[in-house]
Amino acid sequence: MTDLASQIIPLCNSAELAEGGRAVPFDVVFAGQTCRAFAIRFEGQPHAYLNRCTHVAMEMDFQPDQFFDASGRWLLCATHGAEYAPDTGECAGGPCRGGLVKIDLSENDGVVHWHTAYNLKPFEFLD
Ligand code: FES
Image 1 (cartoon, protein in one colour):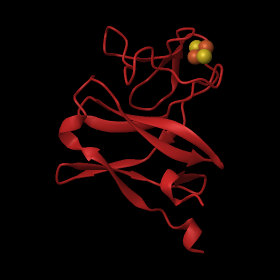
Image 2 (tube, protein in one colour):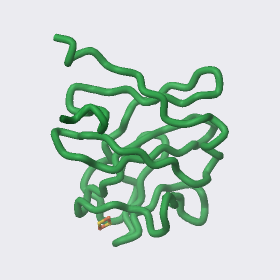
Image 3 (cartoon, rainbow, N blue to C red):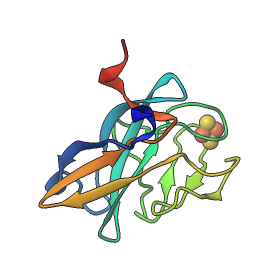
């Protein structure tokens, strides 16, 4: 039963997530597979997603930890130009097929944490 409880895991300091800036990458185990994930800040709020495009299951950043397009309005997949809304992960244009997998975050006392879910586990607890 403890497997069903959500864990809250420190991810980074709040100051590391600049508005519209570089992402903070982290690793998760999603549905049994190790995946890259990333956190960004948009309109003041931190958000995190699996780094996996819904067009082809590829990582999206064209330079390490760079996801925002030039306008700072969309998260961009470098491969074929799919665009996602930074606050929801929903497809906003291009060839994406649905939205990004969102990871719950919380922010308290200058620290951002991510929350596990039934299909989303911390990488280091695999054995
Ligand atoms: S793999 Fe992301 S747009 Fe094609």
